Length: 369
Image 1: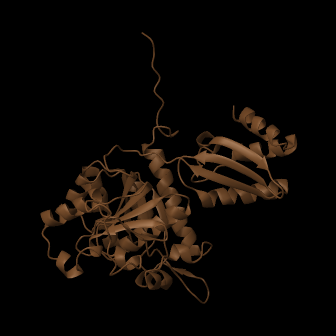
Image 2: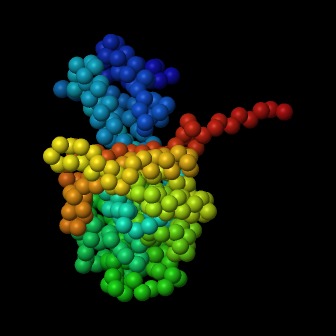
Image 3: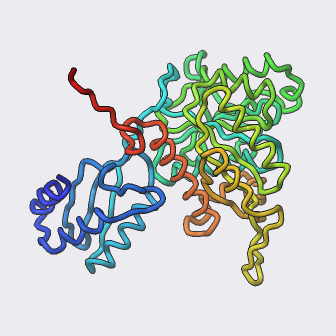
């Protein structure tokens, strides 16, 4: 079927039979951690055009993965000796029904304890998803300690309203964001009781004029107490991501976070292990200052996935304090690539776990009786 489809498009584009077969054979056999069963079963709307200096392949996929498509393009170019560019269109569908206008999928980023880099991870995950081709928003659910305004460089800015009913979210580099920190003084929010904080968060979610976005990343408050449970239950969350460090005490709290989401029937896509290692600036040696392999251990224990490991790096801290996103600084630096790989894994796991088109879901055969 795929061979016939490729043949039809390629012949229309006057691509030689030899090149056609090379491209098809390569894509048919391509496997990666993201495309475990191959890229062809997930792709649709193939089209190839032979332009002046390159071959352009257009296709549609169910989750964003622009950096992996660039890798495939480079491999194809080396194989056939011509410049190849793959243009991906992403048909990202909602995996849980809800009535919040404009939002397809809500992903909660959580941690069992504070100080593990949850908010920094949430912001850079949002930026990485956008870099991979998705439309992304950020919601700061950390009512008692909102960090999103600082991390996005939007501190002291206030949102507006077009109709006096819905709040227009602020925007940074194409990412829309809403936080209680845009509306009230930090000191005022810290003394709110649980019900008041929950109502405030509900208003931020439901009374914001969200544009059309594929993923809303929710920066949850740290911990697993009543406020976290209330928020997890009140938000139509598609899935969650747990942020931890390799340190034993952080891992214990991360396990509590997994248990919390299981209690409210929210799937955990996987674990992001932050501050996994320190890279020596002189020799490049990786030092595991807080332990090693803890994130992978709890991922296996709870049948989850280690989505990625991030280094302990001063650039992440400096740019976070200055309202800059390390993901945007240099798309080819190690830290940026790590965030983008995590973003791919998050989007891919959401599709594999929750979308009925996934090959990992069992097929149901109806038998006549």
